[in-house]
Image (cartoon, rainbow, N blue to C red; front, side, top):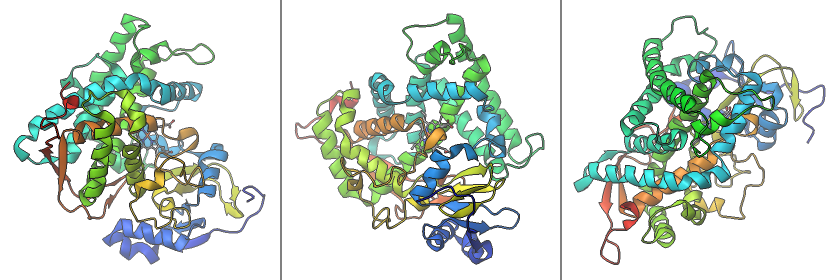
Length: 461
Ligand code: HEM
């Protein structure tokens, strides 16, 4: 398929007025209708002043996110609101930082972190068990967020903060991200112009900086800690190819972007997991079987990860159905042609993982939940058929981190408890900047009686 010739036909248009009534009632249904009308073709949504292109077919997505990524920018004006939280992209240092982050939260590093992460998660699950004693119902989002912040903080800054500070930082990051939402919906409004959420954002940002900057400063004062393999210590040791080091500000931005990228999405993902397990008790049973077989009497540690294959499949399939980042927008730099369709420079193009994951010729019976789609040796036909973590130069650096975290959380919980899920697990998710469960999901923890008649020590060691 030729992706770049000099001329091309116009993209088929979908006028927004066709979709508007559905959009008001149920935005997710409107997006699904747009997807059905596009049928995998590149289309243009006529939204008035803005007419974004929509791209769903993996081959087209590969062109935008990966093969010709230089023409489809994530920074530009789209980045303005986020830059207030995670800093400006700064040329070669940005890329050097990305390389460091990628190395830090990916494959081999995870092996080093996994044992510490397991201990932290087991402790966090112990505390959750105390709160949930006697069948007390717990709000899944809140509980998952406590675990996630503890796990990521342990890996990012090691022993440099207390649990109390960790949870404060977690709250501040959550508040700051939520307060940014109005601006993310209107990225063309300059940062200098006052806007909704600004005051709350400023307060949360101050709190983040009050917590993060001293950590980085203290680490800088202590000098290189050759033994420190937490992310701050390693960022401090890192240099670009030209020998430049990160400044205090850049170190702070690196840490905050990992917090922002790695927490909200993860919490949403883990909450969706309980939605799915609430309607599929058979899946929870199969997970428990695997966890018992692999972890046994424990203690849970990093070496278990590679054997928790079904656990990983369940996570991937949950996020195929419900990718928190349901759309990935890019600014088009210059005119281009994708598969014979002309793309005009200057406007917006949107890749939609949600819609790609529901193309029936790419994912047969797309709405059916089937973790076996991801069993080893059954990778999807196209490398970009699965887009939950994006792709290309801006793709997620934290995928292995997330997978390990999720496997450990499930193992720590299900080795001790059967988890009952309350509420309406069939409720359709809610569409905003991210895709998230519509209502709070409540869980209760029912202690399991193991065959030996005692609880697994995996969660207590
Ligand atoms: C279920 C969990 C997660 C999901 C669904 C997710 C999804 C994504 C997606 C879709 C992108 C690309 C955005 C784009 O192309 O515009 C991204 C980027 C990113 N993610 Fe994740 N992510 C997850 C977990 C994590 C974790 C655990 C970390 C860190 C430990 C992380 C760190 C990042 C960073 C730093 C970027 C920006 C990369 C760059 O621009 O260079 N993510 N993530």
